[in-house]
Image (cartoon, rainbow, N blue to C red; front, side):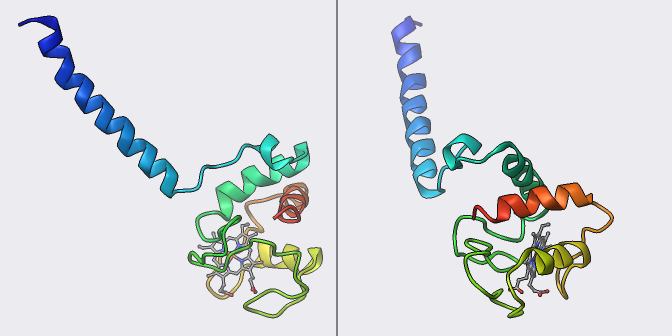
Length: 125
Ligand code: HEC
């Protein structure tokens, strides 16, 4: 078989795959890097913790709900949307440690230092 006869179907398939990936990329919003978000080292640490422990249930950058409410701009409002508790470090620490009705607590999982890092990140949302 001639080389070009062989490569062109492959190339055609590749073009289709690349186009599909590009479309998929347009649909889901691209994840920004820590630098693009302007996160300092502590906030970046907090983001890692957020990705590990919170992201599966709470959207950080979209107001869409997941299992729990979005945490976009959580500290920009005076009160938390569901419970109406004051949106401050003290309440947030309590919620992260003890959980809520449908949310597990992370008391056994994260250290006090890690909670500080997480709070620093949540303040950037
Ligand atoms: C298994 C899913 C799940 C995980 C993981 C989770 N949450 Fe939640 N969270 C929820 C649900 C569901 C609610 C709301 C319902 C309730 O009060 O039980 C909630 C409520 C909250 C609230 C209170 C919202 C309000 O308006 O009162 C805060 C703040 C919060 N979560 C922060 C976090 C943070 C920070 C993390 C990571 C350390 C986290 N959650 C991890 C499911 C989760």
